[in-house]
Image 1 (cartoon, one colour):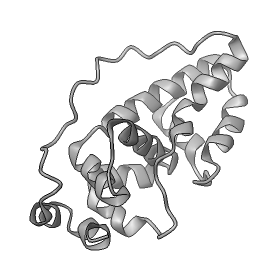
Image 2 (cartoon, rainbow, N blue to C red):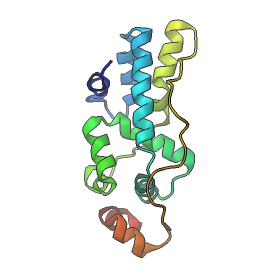
Image 3 (cartoon, helix red, strand yellow):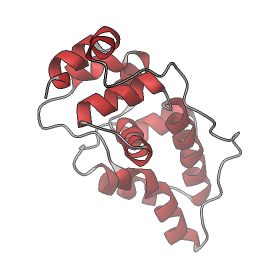
Image 4 (cartoon, rainbow, N blue to C red):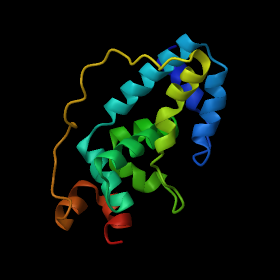
Length: 163
């Protein structure tokens, strides 16, 4: 499976039913294709392990723990390639891409491939051979400092910072 095929499987998912819709799509694939999907998913998940993106999630959601940021990254991936890549390139752009009703975190979405694979094979999905996660990339700053938040994520701060 190519990276383009991976993202094509994620096109047009309804944010509220993304896990269910992806389940249906992955059920049509072979176990080896699901493994390839999972490898691309894991790489995308790791690529989004960035402090500025985490800070954006923190401000948008009014806080964001380690687990919360995992769910946030699952949700970013569930929104498709354009949304995901725009958020990685410029986390501040999330302020313009989200509606008032949007909620990005999507815990269930992160486990779809492993569930479908296990239902098909009776075995756990093999994990891709990737280096350990390590620490998030990017610079950490004090999210309790309004001046820094407004400086580094001005659109998000304007929309969510004073809530």
